[in-house]
Length: 93
Image (cartoon, rainbow, N blue to C red; front, side, top):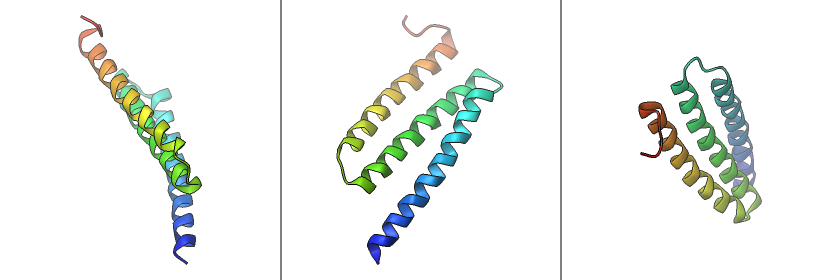
């Protein structure tokens, strides 16, 4: 019984994260300002990372967790670089 509940809850989570992924992609494409696009990209990588984590839980393989860790690290660095670029106009001083 608990295995079935886990599988159904993971499926529901993946569907909701997929919907959130599409909403974030629309914000990136249609955002009126650059700041909106940066926030959309930030939430886009978080949603992608969480989707990979749920795939890893469902499949039981470790490779999804390692890929999610790389996405989290690269997403943080890219968000910081984009924010610095929007504030000062350059990334490297």
